[in-house]
Amino acid sequence: MALTMYQLSIPALIRGLGVLTKLLDKAEAFARDNGISSGDLVNARLAPDMLTLAGQVQRVSDTSKGLVGRLTSIEVPRFPDEEKTLDELRQRIANTVAFLETVRPVDLEDSASRQVVLNFPTLKVTLTGEEYLLRFVLPNFYFHLTTAYDILRHNGVPIGKGDFLSLTA
Amino acid sequence: MALTMYQLSIPALIRGLGVLTKLLDKAEAFARDNGISSGDLVNARLAPDMLTLAGQVQRVSDTSKGLVGRLTSIEVPRFPDEEKTLDELRQRIANTVAFLETVRPVDLEDSASRQVVLNFPTLKVTLTGEEYLLRFVLPNFYFHLTTAYDILRHNGVPIGKGDFLSLTA
Image (cartoon, rainbow over all chains, first blue to last red; front, side, top):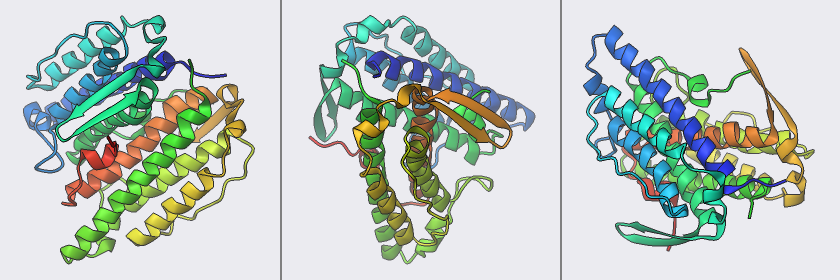
């Protein structure tokens, strides 16, 4: 029994984006209850040269839709990085989910062997679709999702591991 | 073209554990160069009620070997959570990798449909092997790997996204 590229990607990304929405819901409630500006949370970061919460959410979004752009022939929407509030970040996530929901299993059918070229500032990496999913998309998606969570925890938002995993009986 | 449970798990876990070792190497060099006790880094955390760096590394190790315990009939080694130095944490990772390297593709052959029960303090979750991999193992593994990275970044260790992804041309 084996798993398809679709099964491994789209449902997991939609699931993680749902988790992120709920984390931001709790952040909004925390800010309101404690008289904290929600903009302060949006601009919070763990180190001076790391991305802010907004940046982490934007990269979660981009990593998700980037998979579709690189592994299918579907045109990917552009979302400018202009969100300044928790509400705008939630809208960015909702737009990303709505786009991912248009992707069908057949769209990713031949993607495991497709060639993917990643251009970083000082590095050009050529991978198969399968390598791209396992070595870039999943680690990078969870990296930014977790760092968003870590920024919120570090700033006192009452969230826990259960919110991150979001498993149910 | 589809991917097996082995392809999706063991190589990705070994790869992530290798990344974690290199992050700890850089943490050790940073501590030495800046007259910081390596024990201070081992006990660092992002929030009072979050796990320390040691705890994050231990959970990366446990999530990795737990997959083998839950999806195969192989006996899994116990590693007590007693590491107090960066060097002991690196040894924990090395022992985990050595164990994962003994797992063969055939050991995970029928694991996608195997029933897995996760017992959390207030929640009992029943999943298929496939759901367990996609909803628990990978998110949880990258959660603790990323949080270890975030703790180090927050404490000034000069690491970057390139170290986390560890892609090569």
